[in-house]
Image (cartoon, rainbow, N blue to C red; front, side, top):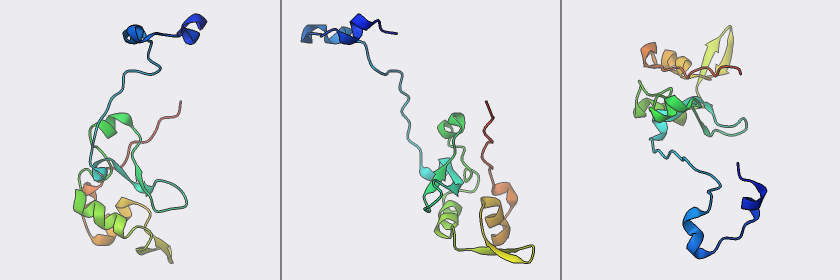
Length: 120
């Protein structure tokens, strides 16, 4: 933690190398969306594609569609909010990748359920 004198100190250009950083230790990564996607929307009022939230899974590309691949990811999200299934005598919109796999008659082994967040 900086003491108050460091926060208000005015540095000259020749001191550029000793200016304390405001933030540091960044980890940058790039991953294809389908590898880190969830099967839920990113927000409650739009069809934004949600992402998994566990950092280890994000860095390893271990999203819900990791076992299924990009083609099924694309089909799932192209039909998100459109396909309906019959449950308990009523029609309802598909709300999970597992329901989608059942609807398409595909193996449930293709599902990679997202990790459940532990409560603190």
